[in-house]
Amino acid sequence: MFAIGDLAVYPAHGVGRIEAIEQKQFDGKIHAFYVMRILNNDMKIMIPQKNTQNVGLRHIIEEREIFKIYDLLKDQQIDFTPKTWNRRYREYMDKIKTGSVYELAVVIRDMYLRQREKSLSFGEKKMLETALSLLVKEISLARGDTEKIVFSEIESFFKFTH
Image 1 (tube, one colour):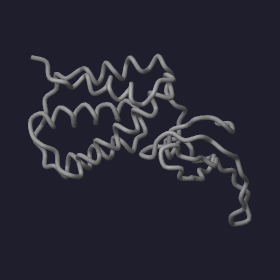
Image 2 (cartoon, helix red, strand yellow; image 1 turned 180 degrees about the vertical axis):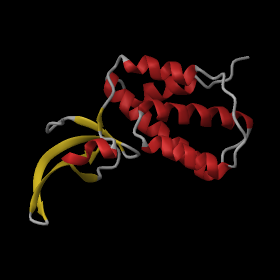
Image 3 (cartoon, helix red, strand yellow; image 1 turned 90 degrees about the vertical axis):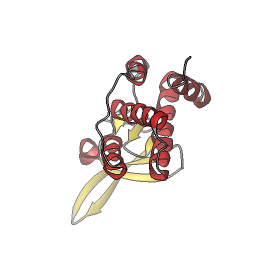
């Protein structure tokens, strides 16, 4: 599924590069692991090959998917159902943990829009920052652009126009 040198996304941690495929013995059985280094923080993760689907490990998006993500971010005609901040936080965290770039975009869009009405809690601000960082990194790698350009594009979708 993945080869050494491939870029992959590990949910909630972001984009990393597969550095090695190692075999380890546990309970008398040999298991194969992907050794992945997360690009944002240099963290090293070992992922059992047989669990890649369960943990949501996936290839980075293709460039053509960026348009769908941007359309999702631009669709700002949504209604919020009233919820406490901690319930929203849990729901957003669950979406981020799916590893879906589309769920990540929904979290970012919803939090930017909510921020217009009411300031976000400290935890929500940190979550928005994390989600934005994950999305920006993946899009910039998929498209071959700088993170600064991608960040500016995403922010432009949420600027007030008078």
